[in-house]
Length: 368
Length: 190
Image (cartoon, rainbow over all chains, first blue to last red; front, side, top):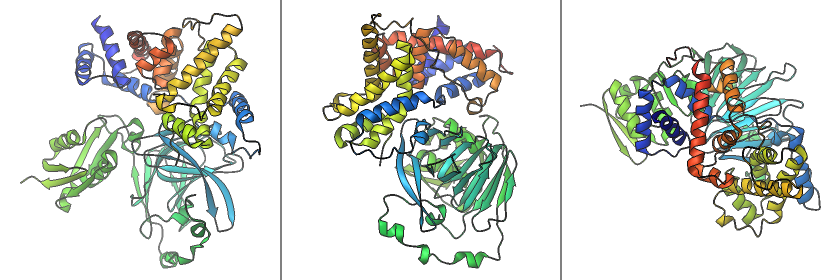
């Protein structure tokens, strides 16, 4: 009877209904029945994942019926039905249609999807490519994706599982970096606040290059990550190729005349980058770079500065350090549902420091 | 800006006459609603028709929609599909009660992505089989709660069951899934 209780409680936990007491009771029952953490982890991940939904003719049938019955009399062209019917999304993502301007004259229709804070989005493209979009991120892709070419512009972070198509490579533009893909799984992190574009390859092969030195291509091997710094400071919207549809026509029409000729100064330089290997963090058994997909924050031998950066995004706070040496302390660990305070207290176990939380600001001080 | 939260989309449709919100709602919901309709009526064409009609009626009635009183757009749409499906059964001289032991989940497949769960494809296949082999009553509750994100209360309302029954069915599903993968984990000691 007791053991039935375990599954009732686990169900309540997964459905988000369990109280604090029930969670504690569940922990005790899991221990009592010798349920190992790995199995529970798989069940929890299974629960959190959404089955991919494949598109069939049925979907078009349903859509055709609806459109025929509800369209206004002056029929407008159907907006790239085939792309959108293939896109299965989880809650809280946002869709809109934008227009991409490339090289001044050429106009191309782009579909734009973005996520808010604390929401992920699973996208499935008609060619079989799947993308998991992390919070506060946006991607846009050509409306005829998969027909003549496959191009995606990314701002933020996403995990790509690209369907093989040797005749049509997928190209991802993130800030100043282009990633050419033939068929593989990898993660790209390029938030506006990031100092560079980080590409982590899980399997397959990708070719990474920067817009400034397109000839210099770097071939990434599985379990490697590359970080290419953004040249000339902040992200450059025009090179990234994204033009918000909310922009005024004047802004769109204005050529890139006012851009500083930064490329000229850099002509003699070559591409600088950092290459690292990916490692699995032992306790969570996850690769830190893609732990966000499992709604986990994982760091492996990382500096306090980089840990703080991740926690800033995770908890929506800002960190302030008393001195720069503190930033160099190294931590390993993982968080999922811990509150900010609990997480900081856990960090204190491996290195003793003081912290003060004031609303959304965290002050880190040396222990006196 | 367009939200993808169904309740918000419903508001945009009702208040702002927003066709894109309507399209978004379709994108998010049509597949699940179709699967649910098919589970009840068991025929593809009628299931397509029922799903399309629910959306068409929603659009036509958008101005009269008391969306403020619809607490959950998801549940509302599932309810519409359920009623339309039962009407279809009645019109075709078949039982017009939702008989949970008679629904068909054959087409409502949940497929596990081994990479996402970081498990072997063999284990993923075991998981899928365990889900597929759940008793239908259990399977439909599992799909509605896990996959469609209905709360226990909403699932209970939709299926005319008690919340306690939903809770038990989820427990049964989890236990079966646990059993299905127990022999596949190398370091498992149970």
